[in-house]
Length: 263
Image (cartoon, rainbow, N blue to C red; front, side, top):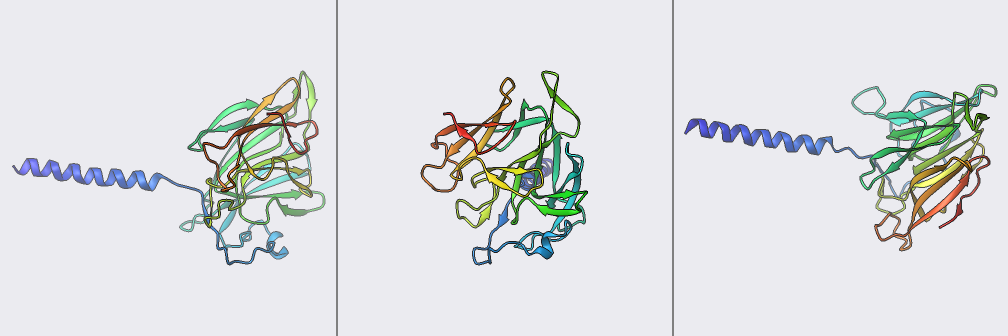
């Protein structure tokens, strides 16, 4: 009888720890947005320091790495949400020459190769800083905290199309940068926007309409075109629903501008 009680106890404790581990392993990127806070731009004193706190919510951040781009004097610095319990960055990143497709669980799968473009996918990546080695000036892609999912930037190594050198001089970013569903939390339940930045991060353009949430991309080798699939928030609830229609846009990677809808 004692043996039976012993094994019941062991199994019960094991189940408890198993459930606890499953819950604790489920991590989610999110920022609590205080709706009463002042929404003005980040002060210059904060913007001018990579290691400074770039969050209006006083979110602890830390620089993670310097990204070498294909433009000699232009470098990027990734800024991640910091772990409060340690001095290291709480972010993780993966560099690749592939774009990504996401399923409903936001898991990424390598899909389409795009010449001249390297890609960074980050978790808890709140911002990217642009630095010019000649002018010694630094500026941020976003003035408020945002969850950057994919950063497309000029490849450091020379690339080519049909044996002809190809060079890019811009950045593309898919990002959760607005509490679109107004639940006071910025996370992947909000709409994912898609931006174009010029080489010096002077001009920022929303190239997929604001009431869309980007899903995935596809590369057209013969035309050097990027196809972007996005869901249209037709009920205006600020989030992606399964009933939202999927539309396709195309972007000319030779000279990108606002995307053109093709379907």
